[in-house]
Length: 254
Image 1 (cartoon, rainbow, N blue to C red):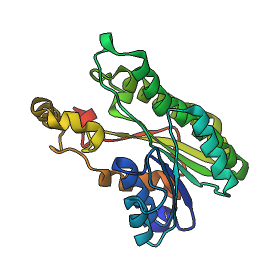
Image 2: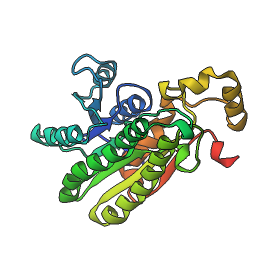
Image 3: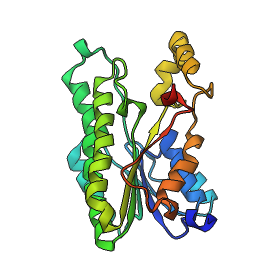
């Protein structure tokens, strides 16, 4: 049974892998046996911390940079990956951003940037990489959703809209691709201690109210995504499709 979680010989493309949840997932997949192709907007092309940790696990690491707010750059990145002979077995569409401003004062440029990074780029990359998976008859695609896939949030209208869209995109692609040998699913993080939630962590009142609602009584960590990511990337999830796996310490149960 444990062999169904083994990713030896697989190649995983992980976006937003430089830090936070993306780095945690990249390291977990490497620990399970996968070689990693990592991409972030500012990822060092050599010598990054995530590269070192993956190589210390005995796996290979290839780095790319991509501005996910620029759809032409996303298309060029996908083409370059294929030109370089990389055929990902696993795509972790994790890169994302969040911009905070009250809805009544939320400027168009913040809305556009969040939608472009969190939703448009995710679709383009899934389409381009997914095409090769369809041709091979197998593949695993994992999106990073959010609690705001289900809830509205406060002062983050673009983020909430984009993550709601990720939930529906996950289901839409699963509907089309499940019969072609692909598994398309998402992980929805709860409140995780990363730079994306630093403003909330630094707000004593908000942090207290958040912790009071989480049954486990703590913020999540990137390491909490190791098991869920390996599960969805492996043969263990071969009959799981179109699902949004919530990893939130119990928040949604309240």
